[in-house]
Length: 90
Image 1 (cartoon, rainbow, N blue to C red):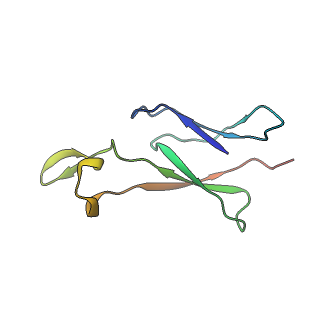
Image 2 (cartoon, rainbow, N blue to C red):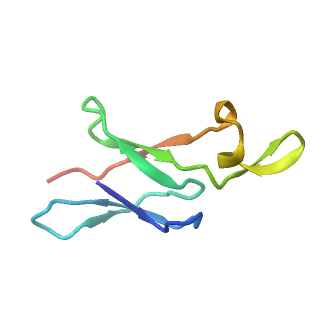
């Protein structure tokens, strides 16, 4: 699997399945609202993938101020995860 997107905080990301013998195949799934940076696959959930979102550029309230998540104290920084369905594998 490949997650592709811009290097900055742009929200445009795409997910691909890749077999080195073939061109990557785009997975049609909704990635709006997240900035996927990591993929976790579980053998007991072969039809799904857990995408981890890089929320460093997300603005949150901290001490009454708008602050980027990556500028928060380490114990206040967060990330999100979203399950996505995968197409059947041939």
